[in-house]
Image 1 (cartoon, helix red, strand yellow):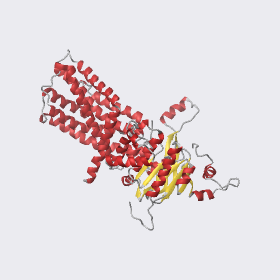
Image 2 (cartoon, chains in turn orange, blue):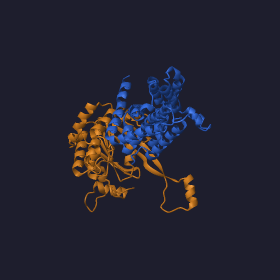
Image 3 (cartoon, one colour):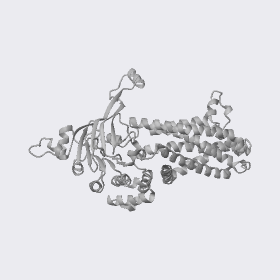
Length: 286
Length: 268
């Protein structure tokens, strides 16, 4: 971690004018004539997907920063850029002062991520998966087992099921193991990419309560992407609304609500703010 | 020094994980193992009754060594394919480890696994061939040294092949298969390379499998010593020493490309 400089303060996470575009072969529904088909074999038309477009944000140590957006709005691409899995086309991202492209190893030491897909070796048990993940961070097997048990118990996961193959566990249980995998390494930057999507209400509450516990216990930086307005309101210190790869609003819940006119005399909700700004419901695909 | 110890410990994660996967997919392992035995047997049996015991052993060595080298090469590339299918590749690539640690761990597992499987097949062979195989004049030390040195080259080739599944799991496996079949054709696994068309023979001369087979056959059939195979072994060592960094470099380029265009995302 770099030392603080008063003129250029070091944020837990600083994203500056980051852009990531993808190029995808253009697909049309109508059948082209044969000569056009032949031409397409040699020269495929590409379309540009502006997954992340000129995004900037700063997150202070101890803060939970929420990103609200519809499916395909660019949330996960932004998380992948921060977690060194994608290289930005433009702009820069730094974690505690270290650049994610040039100092990626340093950044990876202090960061971990929970994604919407649990992503495990399905035929291995949760204990085997967690020990494997922990070893990559230099944590020994006994230490990994001890810490995993502690975290999983706090999440309401029965530690006796740690030796069951992952494919026999429910989606909620798999997601809890995914959270344990991320927290085992005691990350200073925790990226939570829709961690509660698809979970039953009880599992959702367990996970949300645990995120609150982490905030109280550690001075970590947490970035949370979500579809769930209530979750964003409950957990986030600051929220950004993303649409078409761009941030269209940013502020505290109160600031965002204050920026939207009240509906029929009743105060606006975060959902009203979202619909007013994006013109779509939260579950809609882009 | 501390870093080296740490990275060695970390590379053990890949060995342990892969052996855990072998245990969990034991029925598949038994199936593949049975296939290796049947393959070596059917190839060796072609010569029983038609040629000498040396001819039978010539073919059996080809089948066994090809089995070892191809398993090793495939395991290195499969380590990436598997992670792509399971979606864990993003987590492995996010871990604070050098890529060399990741790939060395996968390569070490491939060598251990290849040796174990080939050793088991070799142990079963005498039950089927009996007096048709004479291992009395085999020089096991020369064979072992040749296998170890040639492993370097095949790890290098495996590393290059591993970029295909990194970019596309389905097409990647097919591409690895093409490389394997090409090596099988040009390297004199079951025949001398002089029977190949003249224009193919120069390619045979750059294939590490050609020299591996040559030395192992000399060791197993004619009790050749390490000294007598020194020129072959040196050549194999040089090819290995060149192919490994080249393999890492190619993999590094593949990884950078995958991160630029977004190919690491879970699929399947």
